[in-house]
Amino acid sequence: MSGAIKSQIRELLKKQNAVLLAHNYMRDDVQEIADITGDSLALSIEAAKTDADIIVFCGVHFMAESAAILSPAKRVLLPRADAGCPMADMVTVEELEVLKRQYPGVPVVTYVNSSAEVKAHSDICCTSANALKVVRSLAENELIFVPDRNLGRWIAKFVPEKKFIFWEGFCPTHERMTVSAVLQKKVEHPDALFICHPESAPEVSALADHVCSTTGMYDYCRTSKATKFIIGTEAGILYKLRLENPSKEFILASPALFCPNMKLTSLEDVFISLQTMTPIVTVPEDIRIKAKGALDRMLAVPRD
Ligand code: 13P
Ligand code: SF4
Image 1 (cartoon, rainbow, N blue to C red):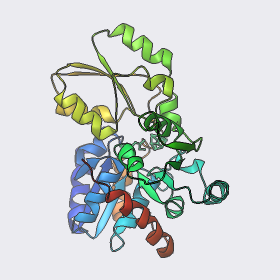
Image 2 (cartoon, rainbow, N blue to C red):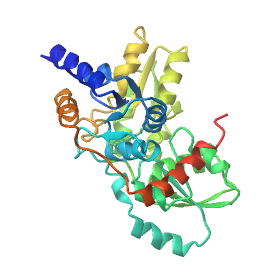
Image 3 (cartoon, rainbow, N blue to C red):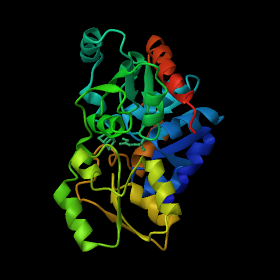
């Protein structure tokens, strides 16, 4: 059954001149048939580069929006319209504008896990991979960091000269990873390194041998001499980690590391989406232009 649906999806993709993108947290079988897997921003950048007419984005709503912002001429499909991100929903434009009025002239740095509208009201975006470089690129010594309090506090430690005004948003999936769960895995696997995502709670990040983005985790585990890793991020990342490192062992830090939204999209959903050409994700042009400004400013920050 699964083999048949996979080949039907591949046929439809070809017929529609569509590209299938899957975030690193997607179900294994969805990652397996994707043209490109990666983190949220890398996927949108790749999508903009392809000559496909249609982008099928297996991820959550804000990611499909980013693809629509960067690729206005392409049709962007999100197979599950109900796949959202609770962290992105923790800040609205109205709330952000209240804070901006309290701190006039202070730049707003917004994590890509946010709505297009919030991006449009921000000065610059960042990802977990480039947040530190983005903050360092600012001339100002004060900034508003939206919406992830954990990513914000993690990078603030490396720039003591900058004053951060934090938004108290968070990723419920990463915050479900407790200190006691991690300590238990460390006791069970004393020879393993613990690696976690900066969306984790500060007391969990404090236990880590390395804190990095999902893309950073692939690089770190591939190049590290260590052979055993306790992984502190959403379980979907294990698929490619194990595929790329067959001789290494990967242990999920907590059984709670499943994002219900990231697990919604099935092969059947992808198939139906390609057949019906729905649900389409669009961003109103005035918002798209402003949001693109914040994304473009981030993309202009040198990576090294
Ligand atoms: P990245 O791979 O973009 O860092 O994703 C983290 C995340 O939580 C996406 O929802
Ligand atoms: Fe949002 Fe966290 Fe799920 Fe990512 S893992 S989509 S940040 S809730």
